[in-house]
Amino acid sequence: MALSKAAMGAASRCQCDNLMKFYKKCYQNQNVCVTMYFGIKCRITCQGVKQMIEVKNLTKRYGKIKAVDDISFTVDTGEVLGFLGPNGAGKSTTMNIITGYISSSSGTVTVDGCEILAEPKKTKQKIGYLPEIPPLYVEMTVRKYLEFMFDIKRVKLPKKEHIDEVMHLVGLDNHGKRIIKNLSKGYRQRVGFAQALLGNPPVIILDEPTVGLDPKQIIEIRKLIKNLGRKHTVIFSSHVLSEISATCDRIIIIADGKIIADAKADELSSALSNERRLVVTAEGKASDIAAEIKKIPGVLKVKRNGASSDKATTFDVEYKPGADIRRDVFNAMARIGCPILEMKSGGESLEEMYLRLTENSKGGEE
Ligand code: ADP
Ligand code: MG
Image (cartoon, rainbow, N blue to C red; front, side, top):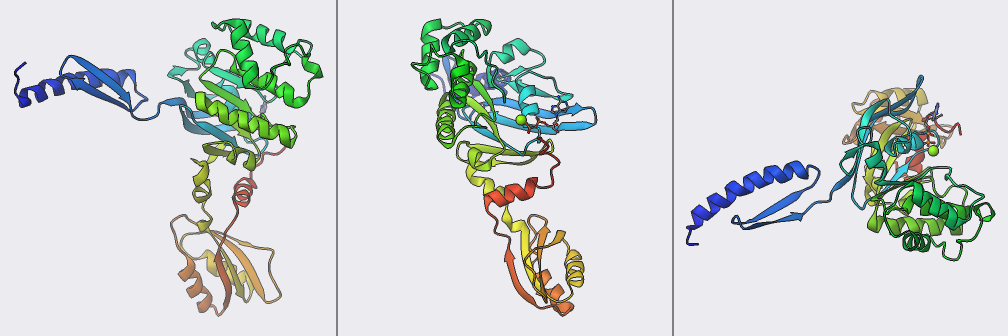
């Protein structure tokens, strides 16, 4: 094949373009690199990570209540996503919609390329779900129950081997003959886990799997979830921040049905940024100080903080991200003759930030 470099380049570009169009269509969600070997063969390399779950503009109304309010997010393959929020935030509702248990009022959910409403059966086969209250038949033995779930899920794997494998994975070896109602809550939860894992679905969704467990059981369940992340894409909900930050790659915080933060676990702190809050202690009439600070461009909220003395008052000043109001506060206080005794960034702990962000949510009725 004596072709000039230019001719080879042009031919390969042309075929590459067509192939790229084809592969772009097939792998819309993937970052695909196609390498052409001049019309002889092509190699496809996935450079990016495939998007496994896509939730788009999801809303769920119960009468006047908006349990989920126009939320959108994606989860990559192999990611362990923590879904964090106070009780009543909309976590279970979102999970129930993703898994096809309930329908949404509007919005779409796509799992591994299948839309739940368009292809419910196919989509559900891709998901293992452990609801808040595990769906157990407590009169059955562990093995009988798992065999029953294997059958109704129509799993096409060697039955005994697969159930053995799943029981081993969740630490239920030697528990096959135990009647479920006689098991401790931790072990029942493992049975719930096991049924979610039957059929090796690529996506595992766990709704508050650690509620009501003792600290040792919680640690075991966390380990299990971390291990799952190696082979599965996991969404795991909790209302406890430490629970989620110890286990997940990424964290979404939800309150009143809305997403209020979405960040990698180790970046959550900066995403929730304590640089948007200034704690100012100044001497003088509190109402004058507050009024003057409120006038500063970028200031969103001025709230009296408990730590005030006779003469001086401390304020929490919330301001727009990106603004730096320290000089303006200094000038404003100088203008009204109220000396600043202290001014510092509101260095909150992650836990404090979470509480602050969710304190005004209406949830918590449960
Ligand atoms: P979370 O799991 O975060 O605790 P939920 O998704 O269970 O929150 O609930 C979100 C909101 O939707 C709450 O205000 C709850 O009372 C309401 N809700 C949930 N399910 C129903 C239902 N079936 N009927 C009416 N309201 C509901
Ligand atoms: Mg819930």
